[in-house]
Length: 329
Length: 243
Image (cartoon, rainbow over all chains, first blue to last red; front, side, top):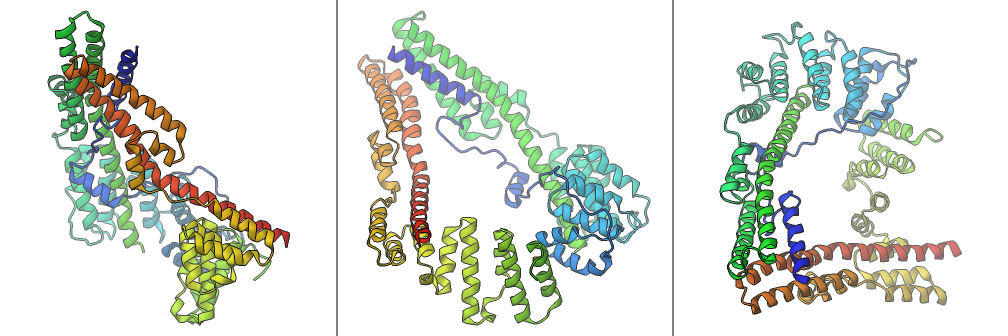
C-alpha cells in the first residue's frame, strides 16, 4: 500500500510537470525570451501597456471660462506630468473648443483612459494646430487598445493633408506610425513597403526606426520554431523538444526523469516480469511522462511564440509613443 | 484659500509656483500644496510635491517641518522605513515618542522603541507595565542559516518558522519516501531505490521542505514585525484615548 501511494504521488508530480505548471523537477530556470535580441531588448526596456479603463469621466459640457487663458499652465502641468493637477484643471467649465478637446484628451491619455482619449483626439480636426499631435496620439491610443483597423483608418483619412505627405514636417513620423501598424497587424507586404522608406536620419525617430526594423526582420523571417518539430524531437529523445523551444532546464529535467522512470521499469521487468504490478505502475508512469513531455514540448513552442509576439507588440507600441514625447514636447 | 475642494486649492498653489520666480514663494506654495494633498488623502502626490522643495534653501526650522511632513506622508502610505528616516533626519523625533516608537519597532530596533514607548507612557505605572509586557512578546528575527540547518531535521525548520502542522506533514511524507527508498535498496532494487527515491526526495525533501522554508523566512519576519508594530501602535493609541 505505501508503495502504491508513493507511485500515485510520483504520477501526480509527473502530470504536473507535463502540463507545464512546474518548471522541471530539477527546478532549473526558464530560458524563454533570452535567445533573441528582441527578447533581451524587451526585458531591458520593460514598457508597460496602458490598461484601458472604461469608467466614465464627466467633463462639464460647456462653460464661461476660456481655455486659451490657461493653455500655457495646462501644458506646463502635462509636460511635467502633474497628472492630478491636470485632471483637476480639465474639469473646469471651459467653453468648448478644439484646444479644450485636445488638452482633455491628453489628460485622459496620461490617466490611461485610452478609449475616451481616442474619442476626444479624433474630434480635433487634422487641420487645426493640434491636429497632427491629436492624430498620432489617437493612433497610439487605438493601437494600444488593439483597434488596429480604426487606427489605420485614422491615418489613411489624414494622409492627404500636406503636413503628412512626402516632404511635409510629419511625413516620416506618419511613415513610422503606418509601418508600426503594419507590424501589429502582421501585414508583411505593407511592412516591407513602408519600412523601406525609413531614412534613419532624424534623431527623434532613428532609434524607433531601428527597433521596429529589428522586430520586423525577426517577425517576417522564415526561421521560426515549429511546434511539430518540437513534438517529434521529444518523441525521439525525451526533452529535446523543450531544448529546441529554448527551455534548456526543462529539457534536461524531462530527459533525466523519463530516463529514470524507464530504468526503474526495466529493473522491475527483469526482476519481476512484465505482468507484475510494479512493472505496470512504473511503466505507466514512464509512458505518461513520455507522452506528457511530447505534448508539453509542442505547447512550449506555441507559448513561446505567443509570449514573444506579446513582448514585440509591447515594444512596437512603446516605439510608436516614444517619438511623440520628444517631437511634441 | 480655505473652503474650496482641497484638490482645487492644490491646483491654485501650483499656479502660484508656475507664476512665481522667487524661490521662497515657490517653496511656501509647494508646502501649502502638499498640505492640500494631505487633506485630500493623496499622500503619494503630497510626497512628490515635497520632493520638489530644495531643502538647502530653507531655514533649519523649515527643513525640519518639511521632513516631518514627508515622514507623515510615508507613514500614511505604509513605508515605515522611509518614515523613520525622515523623522530622524528632522531632528524632532523625540517630540513624537509614540510614532517614533512604532517606527523603531517596525525596523527591529526594539530596545530604542521600548525606551520611547516608556517615555510616552509617562509615570503611570499601569501604562509602563503594559509597555514592558508587550515588549516581552516582541518577535525575534528568523535567520536563513538557522532555518536551513533546522530544515534538515523536519519538522524543526517548520516549527522554527511557526508552522508546526506543515512540519508534521512534511516529516511524515519524507519518512514515507525514505522508507520506500530503504526498502527498495534492501530488496536489491538498486535502480528503483536510487533513481525513484532520488526523484521523490527531490520533491519532498528539497523542494517542499528546504526550498519552501528558505523562501518563507523573509515573509515570516516581515509579518511578525508588522504585527508587533501594529499591536504596539494600538496600545500607544489607547494611552492617547485615556488622556
